[in-house]
Length: 372
Ligand SMILES: Cc1c2[nH]c(c1CCC(=O)O)Cc1[nH]c(c(CCC(=O)O)c1C)Cc1[nH]c(c(CCC(=O)O)c1C)Cc1[nH]c(c(C)c1CCC(=O)O)C2
Image (cartoon, rainbow, N blue to C red):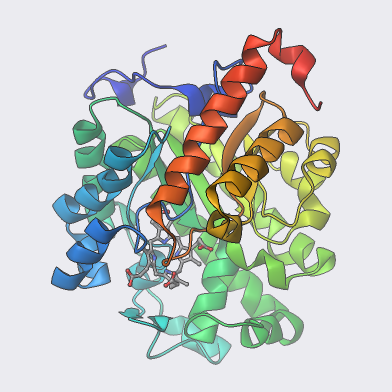
């Protein structure tokens, strides 16, 4: 079906990932890599020498260029728009710097609930984050239909965590302190973020994003009880709000991926949260994931497995594909690729996913190969 959003763009030549996300039969398993545009690529490091991180995010031509870099090198089945989850706190009025060797830094994090008054709760993300949509539209044109373009957002709890911690944290204890001592203020902040994230993701689809991934990367700090109270309901609200919003705007259906790192305890609940795909980190056994999840899954090779000698990496990747099976499956790492990775390992990973899955399919009816 042709949707309004497809009209202005070149026709899609490789829709494997979209079909896999919707549970349709595919000829081979699609594969992409979290953080596939990044510092492990020398051509990205060259761009970073010339420009500040957020300047790249805010300049559509630069964001487009670095998005395309891994697509030129590898046989990937999707591009992901170059941006960051922290553009939302920025849109709400917080300053965020990207410091080399440290990561993101918020000079003025939220310390007390009263600090929330400083946030621009009525922000219009359709104008404030226009640079992201422009980057998406430009990239979709420049991709010439080669592969689909993924848009993304951080999930509410993960963003709340960064806004309170003022950057990355091993424990997220300041943010979790809010959950235990300021439940009302926590829900108020999570609600505000949810509203903004829904509007942001709908605009990304209107601009040309063909899949969306929601990153709840800090779920690993929440046990089942906190996850169910402070993460899951908002993830559900986002899926419902985005699906409704894109339908109302005649943008068709776009597959949604939820990646809640460390939320192995809630895989079944996540599979009923309104998404099409559940992303898995590398701590999850593929067979257990298949038992608890009735929809498509994405993942989950340990990013460090890419350090292995080539033959070992081929073996581990083959094992992963065999265990997940070739249907309802998108291959990926279990988290973002590390900056010191040899790009040749990415080639080995991607090509092995393709060759192994094609081999499995050739052997017969893909249905019969499930879970073997
Ligand atoms: C938590 C989080 C952030 N950002 C993101 C997450 C969720 C995914 C995850 O858990 O990894 C998401 C993200 N960040 C980036 C992308 C781009 C698209 C892609 O290729 O996947 C995506 C999808 C670029 C980036 N975002 C960042 C870089 C490196 C910064 C640089 O070039 O100096 C890139 C390429 C910086 C960043 N941005 C963030 C952190 C913690 C850091 C520092 C850590 C690090 O250095 O890897 C916040």
